[in-house]
Image 1 (cartoon, rainbow, N blue to C red):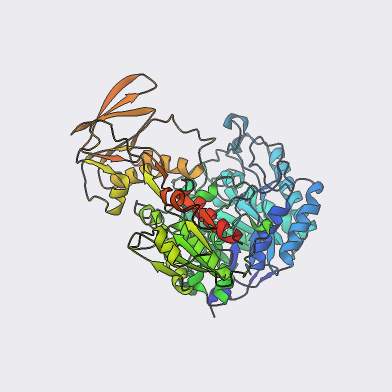
Image 2 (cartoon, rainbow, N blue to C red; image 1 turned 90 degrees about the horizontal axis):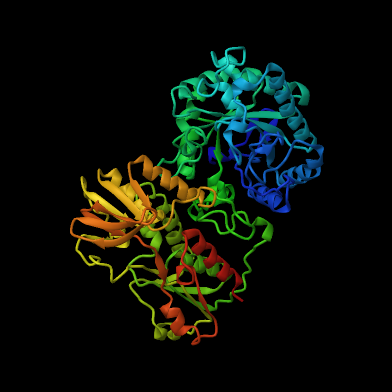
Length: 633
């Protein structure tokens, strides 16, 4: 038996296994902070799938604070108790334990100017004690709702951590950061107050940073020192994380540049401090064999998964049933940082993420009917897998020599190798479900007619946009980005100009820069607006700037010469010349829908899917492929 599946006692809680769904802010409450049926279905799904312990994301505890995350559950008033209780009961019905997470952002500006917010030094002693009482009231309200406990959030640069370290705390009194005891005092007093008021049968767990990537913030040494102090205050478990919006947002939830389990050493530092309470590791934990090794080596007692369970809610069940090979794994694409509207998937690899309230279940009514699918990209493969599970007989035609479509190229830039996990899942499922795939076969109408399909799904992808009449576009040092990603050049010390500041262009530029090249990216569009640009895109922009890429927005490509790129600065109405040893065109794509247009009236049921229908991201292709296959009747 996997150690992961062994029960564990966390304070008063008897957990059925060692897997916790980590608190993630998913924006599922109403704008005025009431819990919704969509939110209940979301958490209940994890409980149904045997997760041991579940925590909400940040709960609004201080409604008068100008900074607050939108659409999070409120726990600051008894008016929220009916919804809180309904949520807890739904989770308990399936045997999981449940924690609310009282939260104060501190001087972290969510939706407000930072000048409106108090720093730790601004609070009087009376105000500190009032803050503590409000945290206590939130815990009492959580207990009234039937929760098993609360998670005290001393991580991610929020208020409690701002008291903890010299990085944020400039006080010199008993709540100053001069010692670990005084830095933790604000938090340990809250823990003790909750334990005294709510009693020994109410759990109080702690989330704390093990690294702030600054010498004045939390470090592995400091978190090891904090462990015994938190235990003495009454904490029942310590979960160790890192980073935050004020230090390093990717330290909180890493992108693909960090390896699996990269935060495990931080938990191990607490474990080695001698604490007797359970210690939980976090940090891009995905694969059972790796997690089992970490637990077996005694580096931690529990594992926390947020995005890993968002991608694969059935992670525990599949492990219990020996179906590890059927697991999706989070690819750290960061898409889930974006707001997800109802009816839209919240995860690139899981088309049902955040759609639990829709009650989507696959009907096994395919009756062996043949469905032809043209294109083995994410839309086509997702459709084929879904159809096979429904009992249809899908057959795929793919013109290339391997399945995966554009995801194969998406996995090439630095930090994107985890995309291969999704490709591997697809290829494993194609084999497991015995789906026939014709590689090196560009399907024509006659090929489709030959198998007499009940339906045809066309997922022929997209074509790159290349301005054919642009001077110099045919020069030998001008490359299409797809050609670059098929076989990334091993060049260094060159001047590279990339035309197009979308995700692909920036990721390609980062890869060039990491190899010692000087990279300039130009784009006609104005600077991206952080308020409307997807979070994952803004993160890539930030990473590009960190590695020294010059991004010239509002610049129109005019001409390419053997050693320069001529562009017009549209804002200043003047031309600029940029040195270029190599030019990479990444100017967008258009739908390759010619086959669909050719055959749409030749068969009774023909569907255009993925980029062939509408160009977009992997997540859009995956959801579209699933939805069409789910709806086929």
